[in-house]
Structure formats: structure tokens, C-alpha cells
Amino acid sequence: MNHKINRRKFIGNTASAALAFTVIPRHVLGGRDYIAANDRIALGYIGVGKQALGLLQYIGECKETVVIACCDVDRKKLALFKSEAEKNNSSKNYTTGVVDYKYYRELIDRKDIDAVVIASPDHWHAQMAVDSAKAGKDIYCEKPLALTITEGRAMVNAARKYDRVFQTGNMQRSWRDFRHAVELVRNGYIGEIKEINIHVGEPVKQCSLPELTPPAELDWNEWVGPSFYRGWNPELAPVFGDDNWA
Image: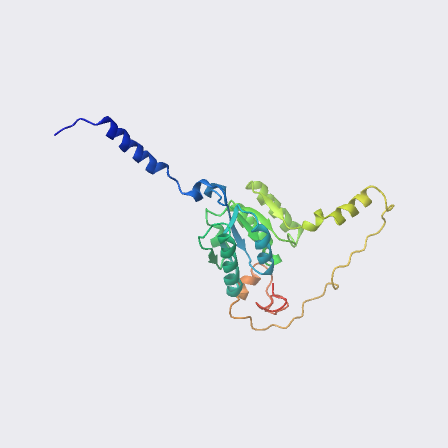
């Protein structure tokens, strides 16, 4: 048997083997119309009503972000959002399906989610934000941020403790008209302010809505969650598809 190695053949075989290991798919390296896998921000949406669909369009314009998971206790809302998120992902050459969950803790347990978008009912914000920070997720949380000062402090403390990026959706505070009004007041252009009157909606009153049977697609107990219990009424959680559904 001839054990001599032909130099030219050896170099050729070695080069072919090296080439096999260095031909990397385009979506891994990035390039025109492609984002490298390590540059993507994987999002999970918690609460997927109307507001989440609107956020999907705005956040969806960022080519680096893709939605990989979503959750809601309303099956119909969840199915619609999942479909829209997958369409948005496909426009960014990302075709992996969006996984849907009923319980948000299952979503934040995923190690491949970088950040969460919290657009759930207001009374859930604090608990979800604290749990998400503890799970190592950066957070965008819709307004109102919290229902009490104690809740707000807990959210701030959790974000600092776990070194998370936290943003809340109070965009109006940055709008030109609001900033202009602040500057007028701070610089004394309107004189000394002695009294401020604020009016938002009707005076606070005890809720007296009748308790009705919730729609089959909604888990009402999970919707109520950490809040004190009251029966379902469409004024509290509008039926999917109604003009005022949320």
C-alpha cells in the first residue's frame, strides 16, 4: 500500500474541508435586508389587545426586533395577535412561528426572550414587571405604569436590583406642546401659580356594574388576577370584536 501523501491532493482536500466549515448562511452573518441572529432583539408580548396591536406596528418598524412569543387569557385576542406578529416577522425575513401562551410566567421563563412588552390590564402591570425583571428581561410597560406609589416603587426597585432596561409609554410628556407648557411655567411667563385644577372623567364612585357571564374565550379569573374580585361586565373587559374592545 502506498502511504505517501500527494501534496497537491492534500492541499486540495484540506481547502475543501475548510470551505465547508466557512460557508455560513446569510441570515447568520447579516447583510442587506438581513439581520444577524446575534443582533436581533427577541420580544415577548404580555397582553395582546388593541394597544398591543398598535405597538406591534410601531415597534415592528425596527428591523432588529422580532416577536417570538405572546400571551393572553383571551383566546381570540391571542390568535389575532399571533397571526399579525408572524406577518410582521416575515417582513423582516424571520419566519419562525410565534409561540402563544395563556400564562405570562411561562413566557418569561424562556431564556431566548430578551425583552417583554407589557400591555395587560392596568392592575397587572406591577406584578408582571417585577416578575419579568427578576427573570432577566428588559421591559416596556404601558401606562398607567402602576396603580399605587407602592407598586411603582416595587417596579423601580426590581429594575435596579436586576439591572434591567425599563421604559414606560408616557410619550405625551415628550411632545412639543407639553414641553412648551412646562417651560412657560418654569420660567415664570404665566406668573405665580397658586392653584391647579385637574379633571379626568367622572368623580370616583363605587362600581355597580351588573355581573354577567363572561365570553367562553376569556378566563375571567386569570384576568382579575391580583385585583379584588368582581364579576365580568363588558365595561371592564370588552368582548373581542366590539367597537370598544381592548
